[in-house]
Image (cartoon, rainbow, N blue to C red; front, side):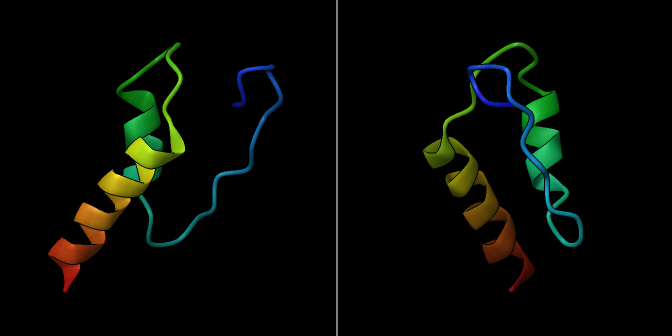
Length: 47
């Protein structure tokens, strides 16, 4: 969800880290940089 309350579609598939990141930080803004870092770590672990 964007800061203005507009919902954002979450892609399905191989990115379970994204919803988990958002659920671990309820009612808190999660920056794109923070999400990208966590997704990058997860993708690196898969290689």
